[in-house]
Image (cartoon, rainbow, N blue to C red):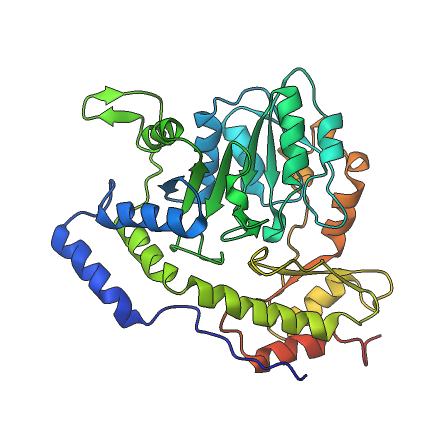
Length: 370
């Protein structure tokens, strides 16, 4: 390969984190809207280009709270091709998930299928920017406007992704981020809700703190969703390195793309313009022309200590708590079903070495496979 391979470390040096820990210890303020929490909300909002951002202890609690904040009831149209937390948040809120199929090019929810699934009981659309690839935001918003629906985005994979020079987090009524350790940007665990006005942010902030408005006033049946100072401190430090992190992931993704694009039976997702992709995942599809099935390749890589993931497999609609829904019938979800049985996400992280990358590619190349 002729591409220069130079990436940046994933984590900042440990010594840079020590002053944050010392300050937490000195201030004796561990949680409940401490100074690092306030700083991180402000700096993240500026970095992401959003006006209102509320930090959470994790992305799942943020999803559940988002539904509460918008007072979502009844049916919510969503995708079966996502992490289970997307649908679980609906169950926790006593909403009925309605699954629809995905677009075969982007793996995001198919707007045509969304519109066809709307009933008088539908109150919202919960879309997912799968692998950080933007949904058809304009079309989804048109559908939401015509039918009077709320539009919520699970943007767990979409940190820092822009579309037409604007953050995709500004689309819809709310966007939810995850800062889990596996994400492009992390605070060990963590998450956030992005909204557009101060009044809604205030309601969200009440809800994540048990509903307290002040010491003696409870406004709603809230939950404990607050981010603590240790998470916020790591988030501040990570933010200093995030551009390097994304750039390094981009180098690795381009390396994969160059090496794998001509292999028969492998299909890659389309690439996006700079700034419109954060390289959070590198999925490939294993099609019939490839000498091994997806699962055979998955096991072959595992035998070589290469931890690729069948992500997302199985579909959410196939789990016991969902498969009884009429919308979960596989006949209604042919594209999602096929993709889930073909997809394999390859290892991608900023300090993945060139040696490891070449090992992965060598084990995928078809020469010698049968």
